[in-house]
Length: 268
Image 1 (cartoon, rainbow, N blue to C red):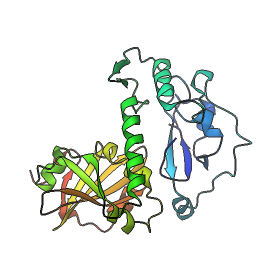
Image 2 (tube, rainbow, N blue to C red):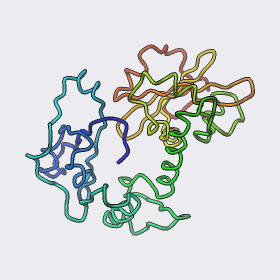
Image 3 (cartoon, one colour):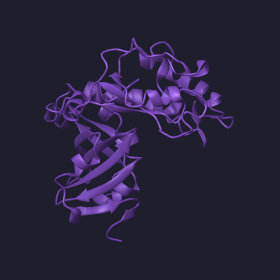
Image 4 (cartoon, helix red, strand yellow):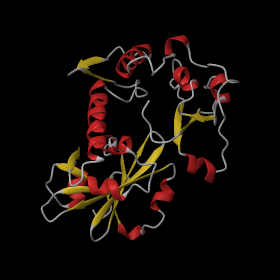
């Protein structure tokens, strides 16, 4: 259960379609290592629309939230067919089984992975994506202590190429960037390894004279990626920040600098 904060906050859709047991958990905050999540990480049943929000200690303190010390007083809410222990069961096996139990009769093998079509969007990762993440996470951890080294962090896409006016196919990460961001303890190898997935969820792009600031969302979190094109037409990730608030990440940016927002080019 890789994540980018110390806590999970249970989030339910509070309408008349939600199970009462799920609604009662809305807002519950527990350490991500608590055994409660072993059996109650959503979805927790047929048609379950619940999710989790990831929070850091600093965000909890700033917002005045109070996490539970443990889950000893909480009851399991997951249906039997949806209760899994990620510490024991392989994530790829869990995804396959959950997809079928959600009614994904159209699940098909795809190069060792799976494709999940509507109404199975709750199951977001394919087997191939898990393998990609694991491999990249390992590379980033090795880069952490490899002075002067770079790795290919992600493939560029048409939005990034147009924003940076480049034909470069790769986005690079350097050891120097990692070392310069050690004062952001919430950004670990796990967050850098998420970049290929983050680039599929671009919200907006801001421009300044040297860099492009790319804002993305993933599973209730927001990220700001600062990308820079070098004189050799290479793209480097210069910075990565994360927050539960998009407004906080955009705070010091000027509206006139926005070049892409909500699926359209502002200049077009």
